[in-house]
Amino acid sequence: METLLWVVHVVAALGVIGLVLMQHGKGADMGAAFGSGASGSLFGSSGSANFLSRATAVLASVFFITSMGLTYVSSHKSKPAGLMESHKEAIQPLVPGKPAAVPAQGDVAGSKAGEIPK
Image (cartoon, rainbow, N blue to C red; front, side, top):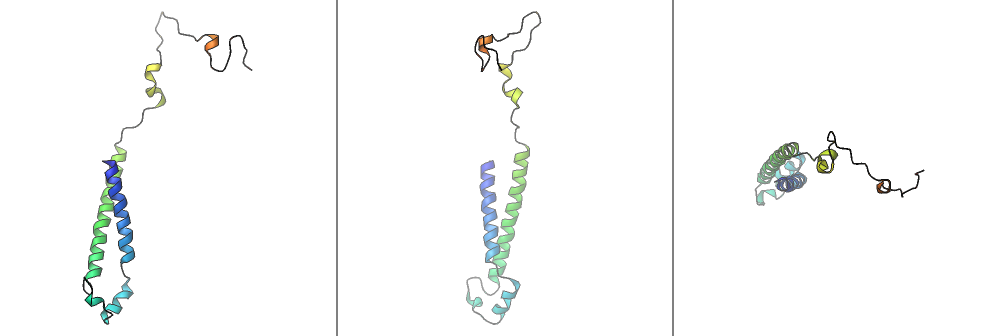
């Protein structure tokens, strides 16, 4: 689920970037008013601006929704176990009346039997 949200989120972000870069500024509308050939385009003289602005609004909404979804998913994720919880079975509890297991001198890591560590 989280992977799907990430994919939609990245695609929406790239789509918003592309649509914003394709849009014309406010000064570009003046050229269309004087007949620069934009009226014969696929969307008409002002149709492309309306289409691009609506598509940008839709993708921005998708981006916002996926951002909120990713926030929700990450906040409700199970937290990884700490060091003590992950090795709980290796820890031997002390039982009253039973001596604690003490490693032999040769079992200590990094030392040999009869050798004094420096």
